[in-house]
Image (tube, rainbow, N blue to C red; front, top):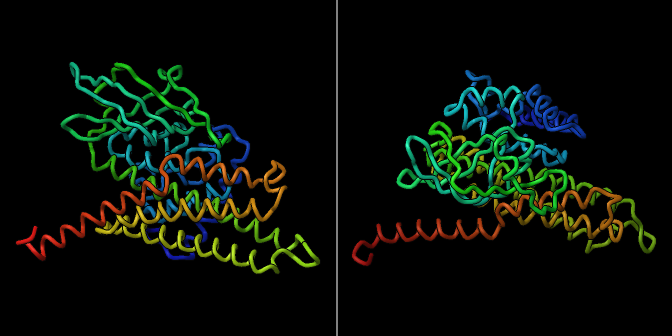
Length: 356
């Protein structure tokens, strides 16, 4: 399968990813990593030479959506992203990740301060929103490298287990952690002094997290649709009531908009389009709003039973809210507004140099 695969191939990839994710249900993280590696899902963004599939973000998004739909309790998005990044900076670790022998994860929030000291780097600060950190072998944290910009630091989890603190989280299946460092020293080889690569990693990460939410939003929507067809009130199915129809129609349109925004953004990234950054911001903002709304609607339409643990609806909503804690749609909208304003100002200055 080549980059930019056709629809039939993507459907087959989605089906394969769904089967693989479902097969991981109830497995320990190490066993899950082995299963996903055996199905070739972890190395999707890695070139073929180190053992990857050399596919694009469009295909990775299909896999991330399947992970969300299947409620996969594993940092697959983080593994796909980091396997691609580490293939050039730390090829041996990347090979182990692709093979399912090593688990890596990513800090989504915060930033460390890193300063050179005698050939090494000294780290201060805190990072958070690290999924399954204690089950991982390595975690990547963003770091301010001073004059070298914002890079990343690859940290071995083994020496940091005691410093990792669990955070209160809505999503019990995927525990999250925070990490505070006060002068910890790491070798120069642990630092990835490539601001462009780190920025791309987090940009692509926002898109794959949105794809995960889309998978959750879709299964929540489908669950609601099936329920209102069979649940009867006042002598007829709930689906016969106009207000219910309108609500589900709104949610359906929102999910379709998310799906198309994600597809376009992934295509822009894969084709290295100048619109990639804006497209990713739009997709992330749209996904956060529409997927949360679909999950909330599913709970509401189920009535009182929708609020209980007898149904999986609470898990869907918790997973979406856990993703939103990494970045609210409002934050993406603010970034999008800043970018559009900057583009508009630049265009105005070019058209009216005397007024700029």
